[in-house]
Picture 1 (tube, rainbow over the protein chains, first blue to last red):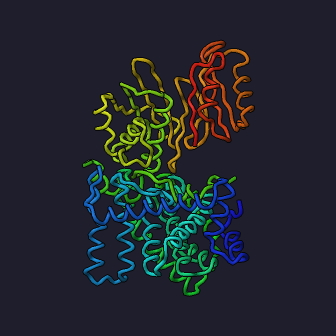
Picture 2: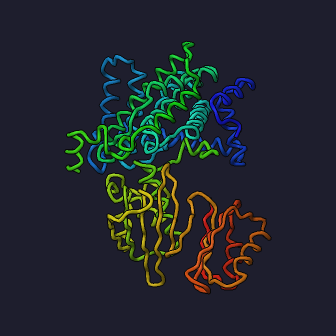
Length: 288
Length: 221
């Protein structure tokens, strides 16, 4: 591996004066023995599936097998267009795209698990909305996915991307960190700023438990995709403003790993604690 | 040791939702089972254990497995209609939930039958859309989806294993991992061979024509 830590990743990118996505592509070429064009085309295909999921979630009225999905993405999108969103239309649009993807996922539609199915809305929503804001071209959007993937690889190998192992911080948290780095790269920020954005996002979501109602990837997962999206964007803004994380990114990832390990099993995707054992959750469980 | 090596493990897999372990992994188990059966089954029993037994409906685990059994991949949109498709094809499917303890929480047993053959396969979905077959007709195996491996059914006779290994070596195929299991001395046996390179159709045919080999099923990533 060219890098196993975020520090190695940003140092390598910094010394070669390239983006973190370039290092990720180089690493992928070395480990898979596949040529650059094919790797690029494969990632472009992931982007296409992401875009289709967003479109579908915003245009179709979807229902999940449990009946719990109610088209909240559409509500948010309409509010974004006609209301006066306090967090700005970029933010509400991004959140709507994120929920749209998460709803498509809940309704057995096609998505790209990034890094997981439960957290599949965050990265596409951030990349597409930031890309729209900065008028990024297709290549830049695909590069942003590689940047997100580089951060995700480090988190997956040094902490976790599984709710069953590390709680929701490992799923929505990882997705937010990955998306924050991607947004910074799209904005033209430095590799170091990418790392700071990741650290800021992860620090803000440290300890979040995985407590899905009735064991389904619906409540609270879909809404957490929206809030995880907002976290990624504000973390990127802070890093782009020049704010540094006092705790280095790799140490934050290590903290996330330790927090996950000390989390009781009841709060790691078993639906035996947290929101999953509330009175209302029990009622929902019985009704489906 | 790195658990994840590819960016597409992180930005991916492309899949039908809602759960990588309960839907995508399940679809892959179904597809592997179908390839092992190597024919259209007429009757299928699907037995869910652990978390699969508790939440299969909400996660569409049943549709994913049936989809896989019909040959659909984990990102094939037809998974949603797989139960209807199976009915249309005249495949009789029985879904059963078991209270029995399984070693892994996401375990499923699939029993496939038609006039010619009967196969019993046990699979697990350890997470992230990964899938493994851990038992085939009573043989304990370890065969992961998205890797190159060959299942070689044979009779437990001296020289069979060496013949297969020699054949692979002569074609420049390196064995990464290999397991051999048998029912009893001289009886039915199974080799599970994981290879670094893909095993092509021509080589598969050559393996099949070796002495004492009854069936060869090859998975290429």
